[in-house]
Image (cartoon, rainbow over all chains, first blue to last red; front, side, top):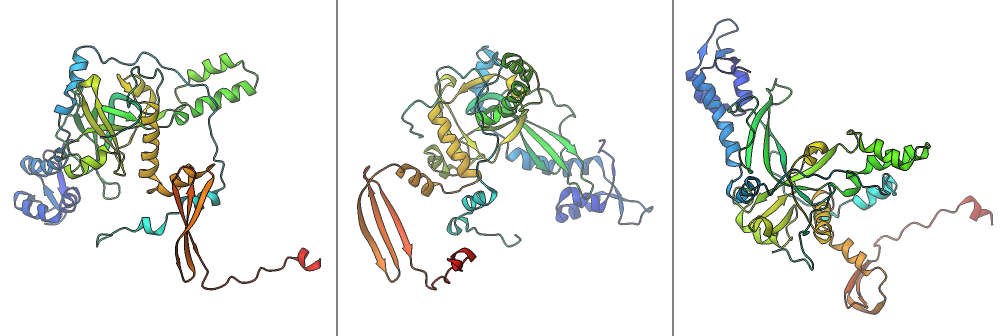
Length: 125
Length: 269
């Protein structure tokens, strides 16, 4: 999808941002068009889109993994000690394919103790 | 530190795909929103620990925008062994029942990639503040924290130590995971711990009572003593031959139950 210079409505921008405040901050850098009403259609600049995009990217980057703990695996790969598994196959065995309890018995066993299922709820929950 | 009576890792990896195996393989988190920082097809990860983000689609107001974040790390196979070969064995059984020789049935079922196609894996994550807050590390290492499975230092990989966050499980196609490098296998005891942690995290939050009852089965009651009697409630301790105690609490019903209804049979006799 070519997003640079895309034509988006304010609502679409808000939807993508999931944050009206940020969209409002950037509203000064959009160009209004008259075809669908002054506040309906906007043309996003490349710079604006980059800013919009960078915010989500920053959230994801904050959750990215540090590379150092995996360095031992990188070295093992380089040294050829870690190669795709050669053996593939199946286990021939008797497997349980059906539950041996009735649905009522499952409900009885799966019903949580009230004391252990207490939880705090956030206000908007 | 996780303390098990035996070793946590096997000296030789299990030859077949098994629960508790560790592979260097992809796993996925489905993110809300979209990002376009990367190319449509990102290059292969240059080193383990790398994450690639690609948009799945743009939202239309009904379907939300989605981005896939694919990590390349060691992953733990969490699917149970029976689940990994369930459809295969069902198919072999059906073929044998219809007159096919067992050898031929196994060969035919083995060649079918649609059988047991999906494998559940969870990435091995480092003890890092970005992954889980530092104050939880000790409890995770001791296997006391619900929702996490600790992997003690792996000697073959420079004593790298990881944890598995059981909310990070994703589905990988079997043919994909089997084509990835196998790092190793965990021991039978470690697999037993994994199964307990999975049940604890995903279904029964507190298995203490069940575990105590299971360990009591078959034991003789060596003694019984009263712990507490208060109004209609009483707690007694069953002292088992192992020395463990089971506390049983009995409560008298405040409202007596209604008398049982007579059945037609009993009323007629």
